[in-house]
Image (cartoon, rainbow, N blue to C red; front, side, top):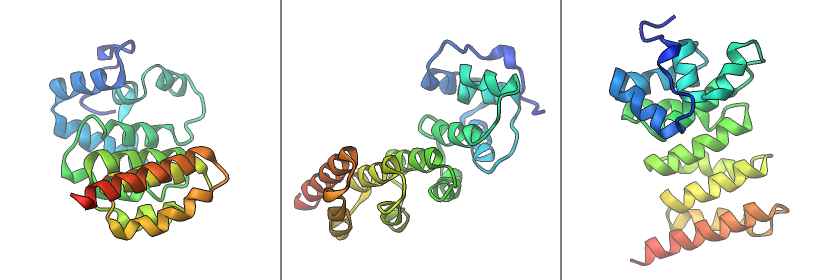
Length: 180
């Protein structure tokens, strides 16, 4: 159990951004990032932190539901709201997590934090899960270069409409940025 573990200190009715902000104010953003990375790496960060990052859903795990990939996902998602560069390696590793939801969330963090992950995102354009392919296309739309447009163009004929839409939007975003 962590020295920061007080499950009663978490207001589960707050949205994730507010829970992370409150926890950052209470413990320091650096501690929140460190603990989020620890969850991504598969470690236990105690009841309070699980409730902070997972909200009401985390209570199910605390009550005995299967853990599966949820803590890793929640740790990754927390990095949308608290950040420092010590988390870069964990986010890049999450892009190859066995759970598709973690990979998808990692694409969001890459885009939000504008991390250099061109190669990893390009590989995810061929992921077996449509939501991961779409997330990779969206992230490349945010951080990509002209060199990323050709690999993304293959997704314009993807069987999944959201993948096609994300690829089109991502390619347009890159073209606009490059044209400036």
